[in-house]
Amino acid sequence: MERSISFNPRFDNEFPNERSSDIGYSANDRRLAYSRSFQQSHGPRTPAVTEAAKPYLDRTVSSIDMPPEIYAVDGNDVFSGEGKAAAAGKVSVLLHMVWEIYGVLRNGNRQIKRLFLLISLNVAYSTTELLIGLLTGRVGLVSDAFHLTFGCGLLTFSLFAMATSRKKPDHAYSYGYKRLEVLAAFTNALFLMFMSFSLAVEALHAFIQDESEHKHYLIVSAVTNLLVNLIGVWFFRHYARVNIAYRKAEDMNYHSVCLHVIADSIRSAGLILASWLLSLGVENAEVLCLGLVSVTVFMLVMPLFKATGGVLLQMAPPNIPSSALNKCLRQITSREDVMEVLQARFWEVVPGHTVGSLRLQVKSGIDERPLLQYVYDVYHDLGVQDLTLQTDYT
View 1 (cartoon, helix red, strand yellow):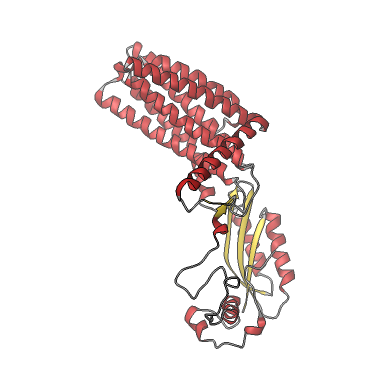
View 2 (cartoon, one colour):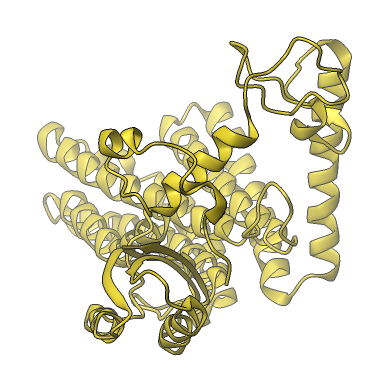
């Protein structure tokens, strides 16, 4: 555990207290002490400052001077955007990403290899469907091919997230790349939500215009697409559930891929059922089937959409009940050396990794180390892995 601020008691009595009344700090507040020490150590600058002694952040000039290597990646300044150097850097980054994906496919787990195979099958099928649609002039086939192509792009993003999340934390991403899998799962869920909405609009359009009889030729496309998606459902059958207890970030990503292929399978099955009912003379069969498919997809994807959105919005961790957090706060507040607990915040970086921050107002003159250890132990037993504590004397 580290303090979120630094404190030097020798500056307590060197400055007047006029600023404390202006900004709401007490005389013993550590943030005011920090600002005092900053003023003392950064006094008026003289013009005779050598280039070697010039600090990184110069507060006496109108601009902030930053060394170029701070924003450099692998020695190349990616923000200059000048000439061939920037273009070569982008190409090298792209090649590096492709090489990383290839390495993960070669040495990765079974799920990653299965996802790559599923993407390859969908790309081959969508390309064939697009060519047939262009040659025969079938607009429905061309539209369905573009739909599958966009879905392949989202699945490729999921594959990229699986490959990138294996990287270790660095100076730019101190928590690592695991949250990229949550973002990929949220993107898939958002796409499925839009697909549900588009199916509802299509059903409404078919009801108004009565165009159901003009789409019988899509039966072959729907059957082929259903067979391809059933392969994907078999690959990710362990995640074929609506509500899953996400223990890791990759669970969200795998679940989103499974729901993606399930939703496409339901869509193809709905078109097949509509064509069969139309052949039997059932009126508004396509409207009924597309409406049912739209509602089913919406109900399937909504739990994933809420879970991934909650992680990205840093909501309170769902695996820790609010009653347990309130109980911990009462235990800490009941101590004699604690005056008040402020700004208690807890969230999930990814599923299974909970962090938090607390601000404690304690009595002056106490040894805070036992208190900090007690607070850390209480929340660690609750499941909080990383905890940042700030103490203020009253």
